[in-house]
Length: 126
Image 1 (cartoon, rainbow, N blue to C red):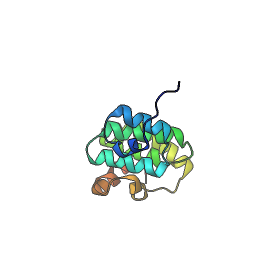
Image 2: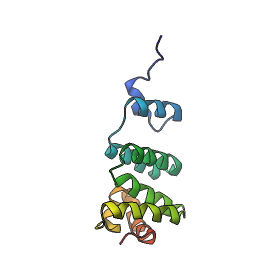
Image 3: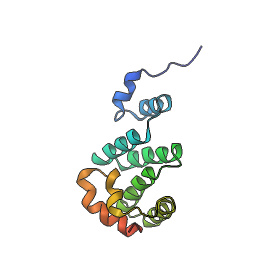
Image 4: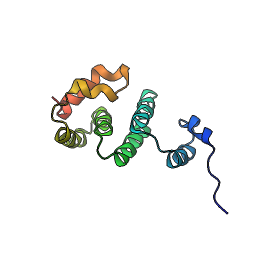
């Protein structure tokens, strides 16, 4: 007898209970863009730990993408974790040496973009 699978509508409650969300993400993997939108939404409502977990999962699932790393740089600098942010910036610049702090704000919620530019610069993005 197989274990019961969450219903497809479980994705509609991603901001609800952690267990349902985790099960839904295992069964219905998200594209990196969708994952980053979800992380940004979590940031927008003050759920930094949730946003970080989602971005970390995106990083693990999309090793070639710098977008989850950029999101994590923003989260880390906001938390004062500059060493972690700077380590990620080194990885980011190894892939795209032309990336600027302004361009990096593509993954930041719109209401945080102004302060994010300075955070990205403090972390080492030009």
